[in-house]
Image (tube, rainbow, N blue to C red; front, side):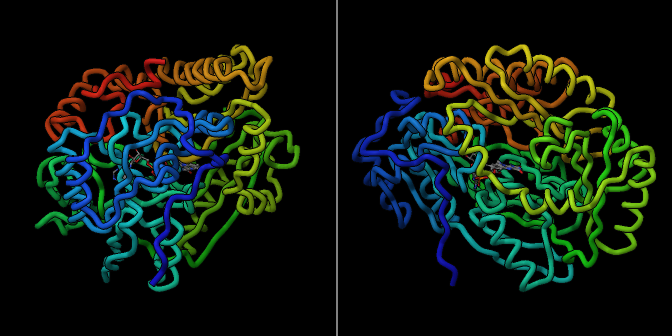
Length: 509
Ligand SMILES: Cc1cc2nc3c(=O)[nH]c(=O)nc-3n(C[C@H](O)[C@H](O)[C@H](O)COP(=O)(O)OP(=O)(O)OC[C@H]3O[C@@H](n4cnc5c(N)ncnc54)[C@H](O)[C@@H]3O)c2cc1C
């Protein structure tokens, strides 16, 4: 049996003793009675200082900077490591009875501070729930435990069953399936296989009071491919970021491993021209697995100085379908300049390389990425205005974007920004620059009616923006939260929801 895998520590983790906490002082106190009861709920209750420190951080880029100077975001009082749904339920019942916060964590590869227990309490490490439960025939549906890492899942499905889920986020080796579902993530092959919400056929979720619910195709009589049995409860938990329940397993849709693959690349005179070719392609019904359009700044940075708006495409699947999809794309790119397909190879070989991130943060540069989504007609304007707003941000040294993940009605734009102040070690300057840069991109997106996140989620960093973005719908979400988690114990301070433990620290400065 494979050894249990735990989260990969985020960079810069050499903390000595009790580290400084960026959001310290907000944590609830855990009394001995609670700790005694908690110790009876699950096999591993961990209070080792290094475990608390590790559980107090994720890959939120501004917090990597804090880590560099020896600070973690916020530590829990204890880490619970359940190995079964029953243990998750027992931990939640215990926390609910005592009114103690409990924050689910998977690979802690989230980049929005989502898995950080800002009010302390219990960090619930879901990595003990690991492994494929069953692969169904002939449907290719896959039941998998939530703490399974993405690459482990793909390896096992491909080698033992000849199937793939097709979920390939850049963080596939860092993120768990439960975390991907909780954040509503997207993989690099999403234009053929869909986003995670398209892959999930059903969920097992534990509610705050310990009740176990099974939704969608995991419901008692839900095994049909589609249903009209009231609203879809699965989608309520997809993207809920640990605030409505803890996902313990999922049923995912599998596909035969692709027998064919094709690649192509083109140069466009402008970013908008490239977007337009993609719109026409998608609206003709062609869905090549990977279509990524880099603006000239990103092409130069990522493709050895190539000074153009570069579209790379890769499709895989049944030979007839791949041939047709790539033929449609080629027709729609007829006026663009065809480029060597070795550019796709270059992307493929470097697609998960994160070494540059560590280097720039170590150099005192403030950096992050912001992914948004919008309709085809407003994407060029959002691209222009977000980059213009970033260019006005004092201290900016680089700003760029690429398009990834395309749909019938629009696409995702993925912005990258970097800045440096007069004193690279000045954290106050860094945080101010960071907030202004986020405001620049999310402001340009909201004014055109775009979505303020495509796949990273809300966590802490976008919490303050969600009420406006959802309008009256936000109060519906809050009512759902209040109904499912009346004591507010599940991941308090996230997704902009109100918390009985106080205002979320990042929002309140
Ligand atoms: C280098 C890098 C590249 C990335 N690339 C991508 C990408 O291509 N696509 C993409 O979508 N994302 C990407 N991400 C972001 C991140 O990997 C995803 O958000 C991922 O889905 C997080 O999964 P995780 O297991 O690490 O979750 P965590 O970070 O541990 O948790 C994230 C959120 O989910 C909640 N959660 C975790 N597990 C559960 C559970 N079992 N039940 C309920 N709630 C839970 C947590 O409370 C938290 O709110 C990237 C991150 C990095 C660092």
